[in-house]
Image 1 (cartoon, one colour):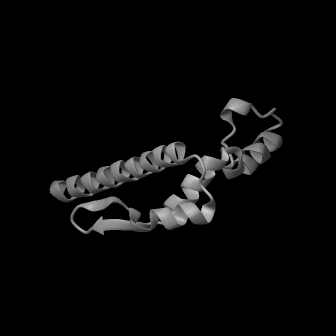
Image 2: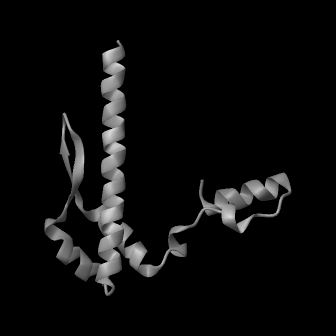
Image 3: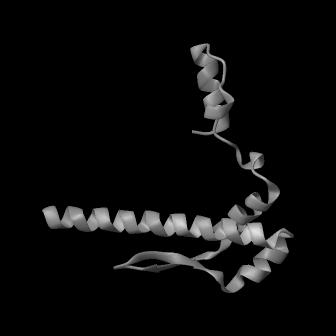
Amino acid sequence: MNKDRYLTLCDQMGQEPVEEKCPPDFEDFPLVLQQAIEVFNRLGDRVIADIGYLGKDYTSLDLHMQVVGVTDKETFLEALVRLDASMIKRSADQMKKARDKIKTK
């Protein structure tokens, strides 16, 4: 659900939107996080069939950072690492579920 959909739903139900429940839009994030998300999506994925997603390919990271104009490198890199860790965990969980499903058959 995005912010527009949430606001439309509240309007249809005749309820006042609750700020804490309203999902953020991309523009609601600080610039450095927007930059991290944008660069994260541009970087290539490292994937192995039997293992899954291993993380992003950071060989072109410096170029992407220059292109989007990153100034707060520390926060940018922290956000990038957290995004990558989240995707790695998600991939591992999906692979585990798939293996478990195969075992039960």
